[in-house]
Image: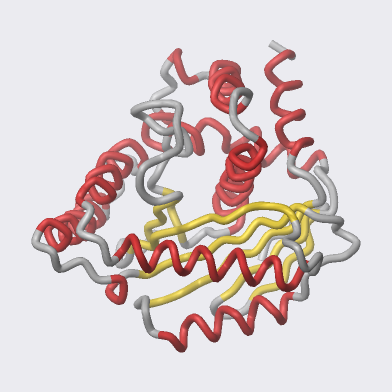
Length: 269
């Protein structure tokens, strides 16, 4: 497994934990390297369009981020951190959903991230829950609650007959997978099958693979225990409400300095 300076990693067959000790120069470089692909989708970013340069992407991020409430800002940074870590460390996945909502600057209607195995065999629906410590003040309990909330939300949505989720997923995939990838049509067919099931009132959570992501903002010196995440992931798998379950749990002391870094980058034009 590749290492990133400032990032402490633990992993098992069904979970991955990251404690981001500080926003190091190496991690900043990862953000810079992937930002356009994250925000617009890989296929569009590869086209090198003038409207999607690094500086214009930073400007677009600022316009989306600045007017939001504190809780939404935490969620936006949480999703961004998840994107960066997946792009940089999960070589067996391609992200097939852009970070930016294409239709508007409001929150995305549908799934937080869509991942496709580079083998082209499976799609993974991803839900991200971010925030500070809950009332218990315990990093383990807070992280567990985020994962359980992500589970509950995805379980509900994947059992709803809501066609819009899958229509948005198909549109996102077109902008994110390069046409040269031989599995693009396979992934779109998988999503279209889910759209048909939703349309016919036959939506089911247990035929979907999911990644549940928690992002905790609290003092990194009081970190959650990866063994807690391992236990939560095992318990969710035992419920058998999804086909396959993987969890990604991140902890960082604050979210503000990620936004500050991006704002400073935008000023460096």
